[in-house]
Amino acid sequence: MASLSEILKSTAESKQQRTQNNKAAREQLSQMRDGALMAITTNPDLYARFLVLQADNIGLSAGNIALALSQMVDPTKIGTTDFWHKQGRYVMDEEMSKGASVFVPPRNQNFRGYLMGSYYDVSQTTGRPMREAEPLVEGSDRMNAAFAALLEAAPVGFIENTGLDVPVRYNERECILEINTEYSTGQVFAALATEISFARLHDRGMNRDYDRSTFQMNAESIGFMVCRRFGVDCPVPDAAGVQQFYNYYAPDERGKSLDFLRQTARSMGDTVERSIQPRQQEHTANRGNNARQYGRR
Image 1 (tube, rainbow, N blue to C red):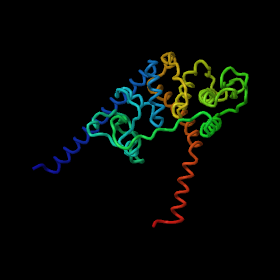
Image 2 (cartoon, rainbow, N blue to C red):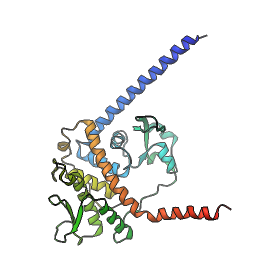
Image 3 (tube, helix red, strand yellow):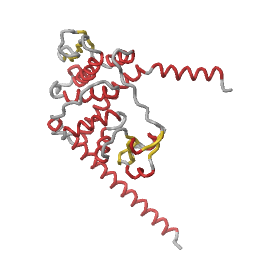
């Protein structure tokens, strides 16, 4: 029969071994993420795939999107088991061991750092049908509201200029957006999402490294992600120069750069989202008021 001293020693050794194994696994996953980010920022086709997946999962970090791309065959909508439960779906038993390893925040908010977890594609789940986002339609009130909200997200002012040969152009000399209202609302919306991105990257001239041609891929990437979120037609950016742009970036810097694009696109998109959902919010509020007024029967 083992003594207390032997139990203490055995338990301590087991805990130490688990800690070492977890550390090794985290380091291995970090290396996999860095490798995936390097691949994305050197391969134009892979960069385009990354943008599509990131746009369709705008709440997930660029690093985790990179990890998913490196481990899944053709991911589309991805998330943790908790995410899918909230969607009324669950991961099929035979797919539980086939998830993509990623970094996830801990459930305990007092715990610092990230833990290792898994993402699963919608194709690995079953349950309630996924609710598809309603695309913006030309001439609709939602499209007009979305366009107005996107203008609100601009860091600079704007003027009408029907003499432009494009729907929208950011004038970096005057730090102003010029908008050609002769184009359709959808065309202006798509161009505006990109030109606002140029304005943000320019930062009213504070970014001394700003050059339109240099930052074109980044601005178009942000605009594409915003447009895809709302079903607005917008081509995938030309990423032929992606390797040259990221040539001197370390892997972690590449991840930060890609995540900056994501966060910018998400911020702009959230502003638009809030403007086209007021009726849903009003409906929810009214339902709550009615419940308080009449009570349960």
